[in-house]
Image 1 (cartoon, rainbow, N blue to C red):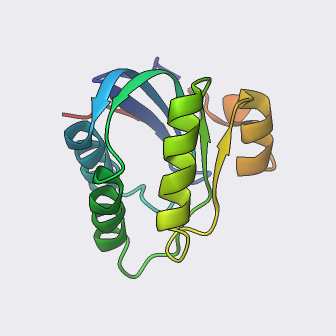
Image 2: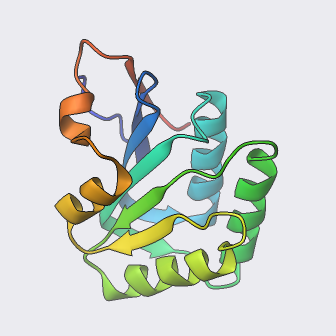
Length: 146
Protein backbone atom coordinates (compact mmCIF):
# COMPACT_ATOMS: atom_id res chain seq x y z
CA UNK A 1 0.00 0.00 0.00
CA UNK A 2 1.22 3.48 -0.74
CA UNK A 3 1.58 5.79 2.23
CA UNK A 4 -1.52 7.64 3.32
CA UNK A 5 -1.70 10.98 1.56
CA UNK A 6 -1.86 13.86 4.03
CA UNK A 7 -3.65 17.13 3.50
CA UNK A 8 -4.37 17.58 7.18
CA UNK A 9 -6.69 14.53 7.07
CA UNK A 10 -6.00 11.69 4.66
CA UNK A 11 -7.31 8.17 4.25
CA UNK A 12 -6.70 4.89 2.52
CA UNK A 13 -9.84 3.01 1.53
CA UNK A 14 -9.84 -0.77 1.25
CA UNK A 15 -12.84 -1.18 -1.05
CA UNK A 16 -12.68 -4.98 -0.98
CA UNK A 17 -13.03 -5.12 2.80
CA UNK A 18 -15.03 -1.87 3.17
CA UNK A 19 -12.59 -0.30 5.63
CA UNK A 20 -11.00 3.14 5.84
CA UNK A 21 -7.79 3.90 7.70
CA UNK A 22 -7.53 7.64 8.30
CA UNK A 23 -4.88 9.83 9.83
CA UNK A 24 -5.20 13.45 10.91
CA UNK A 25 -2.16 15.66 11.38
CA UNK A 26 -1.71 19.30 12.19
CA UNK A 27 -4.44 21.80 12.98
CA UNK A 28 -7.90 20.52 12.08
CA UNK A 29 -10.84 22.90 11.71
CA UNK A 30 -14.49 22.40 10.86
CA UNK A 31 -13.64 23.21 7.24
CA UNK A 32 -11.10 20.37 7.00
CA UNK A 33 -13.55 17.93 8.59
CA UNK A 34 -16.31 18.90 6.16
CA UNK A 35 -13.88 18.47 3.22
CA UNK A 36 -12.94 15.08 4.63
CA UNK A 37 -16.60 13.99 4.73
CA UNK A 38 -16.98 15.13 1.10
CA UNK A 39 -13.83 13.23 0.07
CA UNK A 40 -15.11 10.02 1.68
CA UNK A 41 -18.45 10.49 -0.11
CA UNK A 42 -16.66 11.07 -3.44
CA UNK A 43 -14.66 7.85 -2.87
CA UNK A 44 -17.89 5.94 -2.17
CA UNK A 45 -16.61 5.02 1.28
CA UNK A 46 -18.93 6.75 3.76
CA UNK A 47 -20.49 3.48 4.87
CA UNK A 48 -17.13 1.76 5.46
CA UNK A 49 -15.87 0.91 8.94
CA UNK A 50 -13.22 3.45 9.91
CA UNK A 51 -10.21 3.78 12.14
CA UNK A 52 -9.21 7.44 12.52
CA UNK A 53 -5.77 8.04 14.02
CA UNK A 54 -6.04 11.50 15.62
CA UNK A 55 -2.93 11.24 17.78
CA UNK A 56 -1.00 13.87 15.77
CA UNK A 57 -3.70 16.49 15.40
CA UNK A 58 -4.61 19.71 17.12
CA UNK A 59 -8.23 20.77 16.93
CA UNK A 60 -9.60 24.15 16.01
CA UNK A 61 -13.17 22.94 16.53
CA UNK A 62 -15.64 24.11 19.13
CA UNK A 63 -18.56 22.35 20.75
CA UNK A 64 -20.79 24.55 18.54
CA UNK A 65 -19.16 23.03 15.43
CA UNK A 66 -20.10 19.47 16.40
CA UNK A 67 -23.79 19.67 15.38
CA UNK A 68 -22.75 21.22 12.03
CA UNK A 69 -20.33 18.33 11.44
CA UNK A 70 -22.97 15.83 12.58
CA UNK A 71 -25.54 17.34 10.20
CA UNK A 72 -23.08 17.16 7.29
CA UNK A 73 -22.37 13.51 8.04
CA UNK A 74 -26.07 12.75 8.46
CA UNK A 75 -27.01 14.35 5.14
CA UNK A 76 -24.16 12.52 3.37
CA UNK A 77 -25.29 9.18 4.80
CA UNK A 78 -28.94 9.31 3.69
CA UNK A 79 -30.05 5.79 2.82
CA UNK A 80 -26.85 4.16 4.11
CA UNK A 81 -26.27 2.13 7.24
CA UNK A 82 -23.98 3.99 9.68
CA UNK A 83 -20.57 2.35 9.94
CA UNK A 84 -18.45 1.50 12.94
CA UNK A 85 -16.02 4.33 13.63
CA UNK A 86 -13.11 4.37 16.06
CA UNK A 87 -11.15 7.51 16.90
CA UNK A 88 -7.74 7.09 18.54
CA UNK A 89 -6.25 10.02 20.41
CA UNK A 90 -3.64 10.78 23.04
CA UNK A 91 -5.18 14.16 23.92
CA UNK A 92 -7.64 14.52 26.78
CA UNK A 93 -9.22 17.50 25.01
CA UNK A 94 -9.75 15.64 21.72
CA UNK A 95 -10.97 12.59 23.64
CA UNK A 96 -13.63 14.72 25.36
CA UNK A 97 -14.61 16.50 22.16
CA UNK A 98 -14.92 13.19 20.28
CA UNK A 99 -16.99 11.70 23.12
CA UNK A 100 -19.32 14.71 22.92
CA UNK A 101 -19.63 14.27 19.15
CA UNK A 102 -20.56 10.63 19.78
CA UNK A 103 -23.28 11.73 22.21
CA UNK A 104 -24.67 14.29 19.75
CA UNK A 105 -24.75 11.80 16.87
CA UNK A 106 -25.66 8.65 18.81
CA UNK A 107 -29.04 8.25 17.09
CA UNK A 108 -27.34 8.36 13.67
CA UNK A 109 -23.99 6.72 14.46
CA UNK A 110 -24.48 4.31 17.36
CA UNK A 111 -21.18 2.51 16.68
CA UNK A 112 -18.86 5.47 17.38
CA UNK A 113 -16.19 4.95 20.01
CA UNK A 114 -13.12 6.85 21.23
CA UNK A 115 -9.90 5.08 22.22
CA UNK A 116 -6.47 5.91 23.57
CA UNK A 117 -4.93 2.63 22.34
CA UNK A 118 -4.55 2.06 18.58
CA UNK A 119 -4.53 -1.74 18.78
CA UNK A 120 -7.68 -1.80 20.91
CA UNK A 121 -9.42 0.45 18.39
CA UNK A 122 -8.20 -1.76 15.56
CA UNK A 123 -9.68 -4.85 17.22
CA UNK A 124 -12.98 -3.07 17.87
CA UNK A 125 -13.38 -1.81 14.29
CA UNK A 126 -12.76 -5.12 12.61
CA UNK A 127 -12.30 -8.81 13.15
CA UNK A 128 -9.14 -8.73 11.06
CA UNK A 129 -5.98 -6.66 11.34
CA UNK A 130 -6.44 -3.50 9.28
CA UNK A 131 -2.73 -3.29 8.62
CA UNK A 132 -2.76 -6.77 7.08
CA UNK A 133 -5.92 -6.14 5.07
CA UNK A 134 -4.54 -3.01 3.44
CA UNK A 135 -1.76 -4.12 1.16
CA UNK A 136 -0.85 -3.56 -2.47
CA UNK A 137 -2.74 -6.67 -3.58
CA UNK A 138 -6.10 -5.59 -2.17
CA UNK A 139 -8.55 -2.95 -3.35
CA UNK A 140 -6.81 -0.20 -1.38
CA UNK A 141 -6.76 3.29 -2.82
CA UNK A 142 -5.23 6.36 -1.25
CA UNK A 143 -7.45 9.43 -1.23
CA UNK A 144 -6.06 12.92 -0.72
CA UNK A 145 -8.50 15.39 0.76
CA UNK A 146 -8.57 18.63 -1.28
